[in-house]
Image: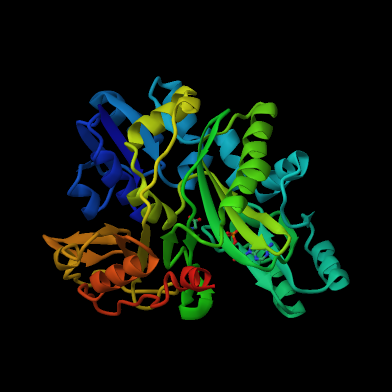
Length: 426
Ligand code: AMP
Ligand code: GLY
């Protein structure tokens, strides 16, 4: 079978890497892909929102399965479009992708289904929102309702920051229409974790736990990014907590979506805060986490393709997932200046040496070609990933690989996985 992967980041490289290992797969096509994905499949220069061209490619090539990586085409209805044209596609339809595309919609589902989450209030009028902040006080979390490329959330610990965040979203329209509505949310305290799960609309099959590192600098300092590294499993999610998350969050969400007439198929990603009172949902995402899936897939023993097909076909109840016992760590190497402005086109060396380290694989996130030379082409450039028998070994291997790679201005966090070590020592 031919499989088409839609997207061009580290998540899609990891998906392509895993899918290409399937004996069921003859060829992987990638649209638009990246130089790392080009080593595993055939890249076709079509953008993720070019629905007609993607559909024509899938039809002309006889693609048996399309796997959509990013949230933007999902929320715009790429899966609806492909399936209407008779092409099997993995991911939620637009009506279900609203779980990520509208935080207000997600809250209404959670409240209706009794899913534990932060208390919140919604506003379409900035003056009313500011009055609310003045009367409730801080800390408070301000969230633009719509998709804002991960930048629409401010955790405000003082009044000025809170009011400024409301003005930026609602008056300055920093996130466009995504800020027409704003949610003001109770600030949750605890440690974050990500649980990704497969869903076929009825059955939920969770993947191994993981943890992202969003702030740009060590010790969680500095501005938030798309994610500077991850590890799996996340020991903060004990076995009992994992069961509780499936029972009180994932299952009710999929049941509630089906009852509302918008069955959820694809990956349901729960971003969680593990609070002293139990797990609380920070957000739902409608896709594989990036960089979480880069550490989850290397630990997955199953062939991924039958799992994706089972989600599309409604037969997930016949499957169970198996995981390698060890751990996996990924370190993001970023361009100088990221998450602010950064240069592109810096030559990258050392990836083959890095991949000689035991258990290491390097996923491309923001790379390009200048002639035949590999160069930087994004903020997050590489996801340097390694498996190992335990978290400390995976950390050592990942950083040994990182030290072999060079490009001008490269920076990365040096403490990926340290939170896991604190739990393991305790
Ligand atoms: P999101 O874009 O929804 O993932 O939010 C970005 C980050 O903001 C999360 O990863 C959390 O670190 C933080 N955050 C969001 N909501 C809350 C909340 N209610 N309490 C505390 N932190 C939050
Ligand atoms: N790792 C955060 C995200 O994928 O949204």
